[in-house]
Image (cartoon, rainbow, N blue to C red; front, side):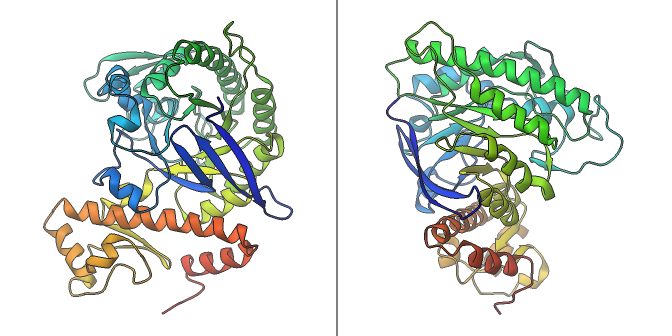
Length: 416
């Protein structure tokens, strides 16, 4: 366990924001840090070597998808996720709990939602069908690949994630929606708490059984939707849990905490702040599934150390580009004869070598290279922005940098 640790660096005055270093068996992560998502052991359209070149410090893969294909036994036999995908740095895996929501009710794969309509516990997104059913013991999934049935429990999730071999894993949880009633949120919170204990126990047992492998850190996941009392209770209750496996790891604690669950974008910072109030200072906090610059600032200043989202690569494949002044679609006609880079201030491979006109052409011609070049740029933009946030905290100029960056992003400050 000496291979994993977290050290706090500079702090934001009067707020939970801080810099730090997260140490894992496969390298160190300077925080705050954005962790790009490689769902199926790949960031779509981009080489792992390229992700390293653009500054990614760690990658996150999806335990549910890798369980279905190729299977955790194959990844384990290959030497773990990093070796399987030829990624030398730290790796994260989620628990499969997200699929409880995304497959169960069919909503978009983002953390932030809007609370609209009358609360209902049987809600399903329009045009979708329920592919996951939750009970107190676990979740029964129907595979989106072939319709076959599968069963996830906290113990199964731990076995899958230990087989995948990521440096950071997350406890199995139930992700509710903002449409769920208060009563259901309370019931779900208790269920997630009980699952967390089972995850901790199984994690201890597997850590002892797999002592030949590097230690894998386990983060608990905090739910509670937008209810302050539920979020705070979840933090306190999870922090108090201890393992009881009967192995040499008996009595261990969670190594860190993931802040999950559905929330409205406008409440993101507030909810992260509630959690940071309750969580121990010396342990890392990961915010699951955020993607826009406003979210990064809100998350960081309220105490998030790392965060992930698939959005930079997903929107890139649909021709959406991030620049300091906002987001635009490069496949529109105004870029046909634009022979400038996507962003003249960007240091990525795409901006150094290709023009907007060429990338516009690739999308119109339906060439795969379009997705590659745009993903490289969007991931670099996101990583670089978070790096600059971290540097601004260390330099004592965070508030000035925030005002400047968000002013450009929101169109209040024009640079040209």
